[in-house]
Image 1: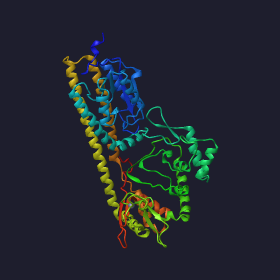
Image 2: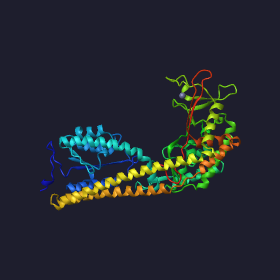
Image 3: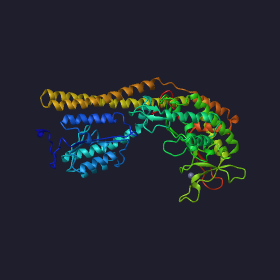
Image 4: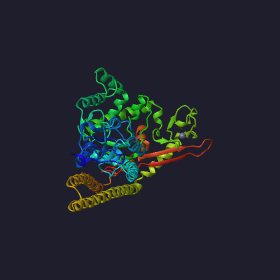
Length: 531
Ligand SMILES: [Zn+2]
């Protein structure tokens, strides 16, 4: 008789070993190291095995690529339906946060919707909802999970970079030309799409415009992934996507060069965020770097021609300067009588609360910003720039060291748990089946910790060996020095590189002083990846 494996909860519902469900959720936008589908599934299977419960394929519910932020997931919906239909006596999850990322949702589902129907077990957490003490602990765990997630979110950027360094899918849709491998691993070249990418670059370098290229693809019967026709913007994005040279960039909003945008009548802004990172060799190469560079030079050339024609591109700071209200400052060509002004886009009176900033005189703002950039990239400030870089390096070291200390602590406590298990087993307090199951669980956990430890050591080594690369500083310094000889487009490029953030505001009224704040972009940790 299998009676001895029946567990009975407070409501008199037995865990029927034949009706145990497993729920697995994996989403690419999370830091999922160690919680991949395979790891979760294996961990749950071990758990069932250790309990002597039966693993039923039809009771395994999987949501792949779904965030835990919503309960609208096909796998979860099917599981809830099965629970309501009485087909499930227990739900096993890897961790509670697989069910939902919200404490309220988890608690409502487990303690209300499922109360009396089934209970929940987590392979990694001591969850037992059968007693009131267990419920209390369950609340605490659920809140802890929510807190932990917010911490993890902060680290996601470094996780993405690390995975890219290891040649793994960094967690978003593969760009056109690539496809996902059969595992959440490396991106592969999609031969058909890559051929289209090659054709686009080739035609562009042969002098075709982006509209003509888009039309040509359509006429050739080639369609983009999720649309019936090609837009010029799509082509422009393709032509400027560094991913095709094998490089992945994070934290930067990449948009088409201004000339392309203007030719298609779009105004979009490029922000360089402080947490910008670049990983070379992260993807297989579709476009050789030298071909890509040539295409970028063609863009730049077109931008110069455009600059002579279009008044708006004479506004050096478009896309760089913002208003403290959050609006962007745009060149205003209508008003002026020979003078040029910037104007906050939120000043239009049709808004419920229009911005109070007055017109900003172009020459005054531009002079202020250029002076600020000149000062920052004065060769005399090279030392300060270097010490900034050193500070960033030190901070990165400290971060990794504290992560490593955390991992070491976890390993120690794992070791202690293992010793307790051994003692209990030797004393005969623990049945062999339970002992093996728990030891296996600890081993899975240990392997994961060892892996993050190794990753930490590797990164530590990278940071220690990183060398300061002053090329960028010297280049900017040289170009600022030659400011008078630069074209409008070159000046814009310098400012876009040098300025991290800039706001300008002028209170309304005659003679009110211009309030400007300029933040020079921090030097990045070159040679290693900023996290
Ligand atoms: Zn404003």
